[in-house]
Image (cartoon, rainbow, N blue to C red; front, side, top):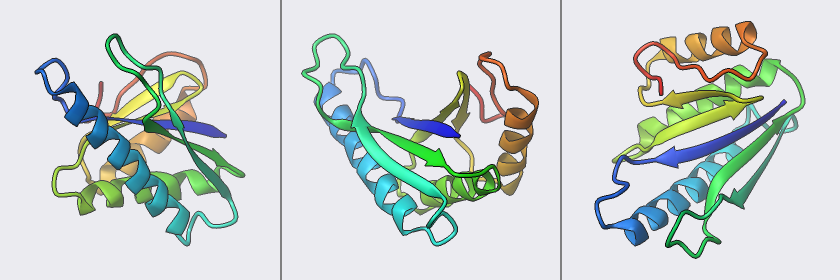
Length: 138
């Protein structure tokens, strides 16, 4: 199972694109380190970073996508829990968009119910329709 995790802090379009890009790159680097150090994911997840598509006026090249390939479905709960925990450790947690097979979930909250909602959503939706969790969605 392959997942792309991208970030947003809600500041797009306010004239601070360079700071915004730096924040997103820092978020990607921080989450990458967090996930590679997560004992529950060791041995069952391949975690990498890559550059996203640069927007108009951006040079690109910043690491702002964390790509995770899981060896089995059991590790999915650990991945989501690790992302929720990472967000809780941040002074200003960014929104994290988790995408799998075209199904996108935006993670804004950090409740334990969020993990259950995302797992249920991805288990029910195997097609490429966008979706969201209750209150945490896009």
